[in-house]
Length: 240
Length: 346
Image (cartoon, rainbow over all chains, first blue to last red; front, side, top):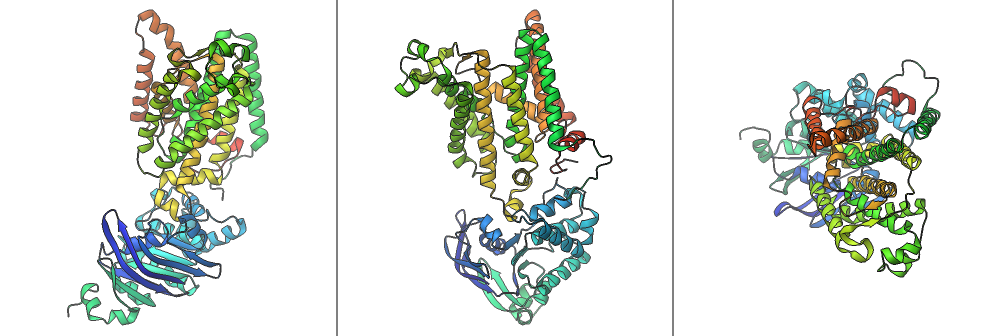
């Protein structure tokens, strides 16, 4: 569904992504793990059209056709079904929870569909229904993360990019979030997940990539990487 | 969009009908005013309406979209000169502006087409200025629009054949009256209201709140900012054109940086993003500065009203930084005219 080949991205003068290649198949949950500054977020920003690569190829293929992510506008990429849920709970602080969710459906126009999608999100995160008329800025960190994911879901993602959904959250909330990610996968949403919490990511991922200094250094099935010595040592905190 | 606040009691009349009724009542008041009050007060009212329209139109950028534009005086100057040259009586153009190109020297338009062309010209200028600047984040727009005021001013001063230089154009036909000002204000308010509570308005406010998130939900933030800037410029130019057809003179200094400051103050005091707030603040400041004029003259403290306006701004920023209504509209008005809670600062 997603094919990335030889992607080179610069931010200013810094060469952030170097010859990055990977694939995500339809219905799959792929994880991208790696240390801070490895280039994970840059990868997602490039895929959603917010950064432009110097060279390389990134294509998403859906039943709706093929879209060149290196050229299409961010807006067209969203319309094509690639939804990026950015790092750090980027919500609209002074808008209410309901309004934030409604903004997720910005590119959609059928009211019944939006209402149905909103109901689904409310079912996944009941707290968002309870807090519907509160300003989003008043939510707790975990609730804001749920809102950010809920808003992404309202855009009806075919491919969902999740950037550090567990960042800075209490363990219990992290569990809730991962439960939802597992449910989304079960519903057939293709997901590309960035995580620092490598254990949890590798547990649920079908496929995983390890990124170091802007390069993909390892690839394999989630379970397989968990047993890899290098991964165990660097990311799982297991001494050799 | 789901309604988040249930209406307590049904109002007897809502939406378009309510808006029409309020407009009709206001029109009746205007009719009464112009029939009974002195010319001076009626002209002051017209200026007040135009100021309100200007403050509301500045809200497109400085309120809804969270940009900081100072460009209104530049667009008003453009609008004023374009419209004035178009409406100027043909027979007097020969002596007043002998250097005009043929097609301008022989045209004499009525007010409506002239102000529409004036608005369109300013919109094109906004497009040209906005194209490079609105791609950048931060306060580049403030700096660029400040520069634009200076550029337009020196253009108006030095392009003698079209503008008559520093002495400006005088004897512009007095085609604007209180009804033009009032009608234009209604048009601007209605347009702002419709946009604010539409999908475009939501996109503007989302862009203001969080640009990254806005782009992630599929909003083309550059386009949204451009639309806000161009719309504001259009209305500013029309207002500038209407005003010179009221005071019948325009010089390169008619609309200065000081005016940009005053308009920003109106928007901030009313609450950035609040339409009703802008109207109220614009009215209050217009009346206040006019009322202080005789006081200034009697005590010989010229510029005192400007100081008071600046003090009022500081006071508001200190005591109520969100302004009168935050970025929202007063509840009763919202219920009357229709419009959900969107963008309401709690």
